[in-house]
Image (cartoon, rainbow, N blue to C red; front, side, top):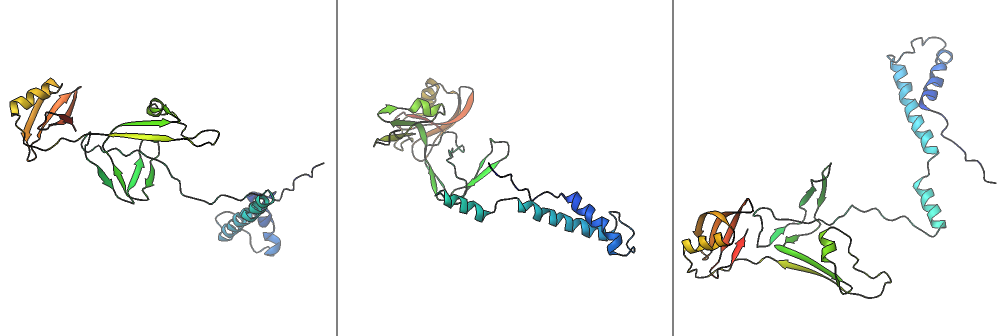
Length: 235
């Protein structure tokens, strides 16, 4: 038969304060007659009752030492505390679809603004944002890219613990190549329009021999480039 638990926290704040107020007439020999909350003495009694109520509450709580002792009897130990960590996707939105890497310094503050209450993380080291056009993953000889793109979990390790291989493939965006561009402005505009860009404007040839301008595609205004080889690059 199990023993009934011993309850030590059996006195509430109101009980402690009431017991103290009841003792005022005898303890003060009748000289303390105002027992209302406006009396400074009652305020002190309320404070002491609050502090004593906290101490009585902790009598029924397991201390950290008791918890560690019980875990030691079971052959376990509490895990060390550590800061919350997560994996975040860094997207360079400064130019729409960048073709160059961007450095993120250590200590940069990242905010997950999509949540109700903003959660902030700080990078522990420097990072590089690559101009990734596509991501693929293979594990156990199978292509799991479709699961990755729809946000499903991808099993990278075998359930039986045997050795296996997994690979993450990053396809980077190509950058326009500098060179002696013989394409005329009219021809460059025509090629961009043929590629589906409407209302091409601000078309100019920069110092690297790359035509750069603005066009509308799929209802969105985008920066677009055309190099000397005739390759088109949205940005």
